[in-house]
Length: 223
Image (cartoon, rainbow, N blue to C red):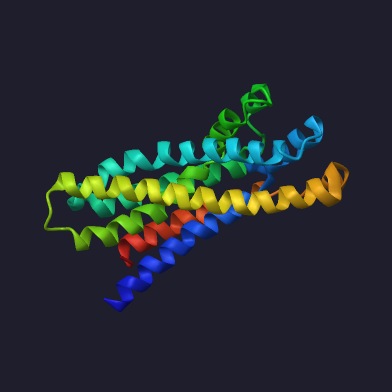
């Protein structure tokens, strides 16, 4: 029982950490929030832009997690589903390692449509996929606790978990990205950002592969 509670806690911490990691990554959009505030010369534009980015990111997380929440109630296929999800995440990471070019369609999205841009960016970079192995691990732990219930009830519980994971992850991402955006906007400026820009493309792709391997390992040997 204690080990199971520890596993649950560790997975929820992983949700928070992944959100922090996404928030720090400039590819998830916080430079656009800084740019919007500077162009409008209004500090209120910064939280508005961050809110739109958060909305788009949250919707992308839900779009990825919900299909898996509808599948995981097939408890007899739980291991296969988790392994398949892990392989999918690994494949995305390998693809991003091979193809370093940023999706061109993101450049065509109007800067004012930050929610749409955030949604598409999260999809294109596999941000939602990174959450899938963690989410499935949480659902697997919950499945033992409600295994005596009907499949419909289990599925409903998984859907609630999907929204909870997406919300907690997005909140962590927004706080992390927001802190950096405020520092850049209030003190450092975009010139500093252009001089010290750091590229996380390789790190991002490798992290997807590691998360996928973690998902496969936990499906076989974990919970």
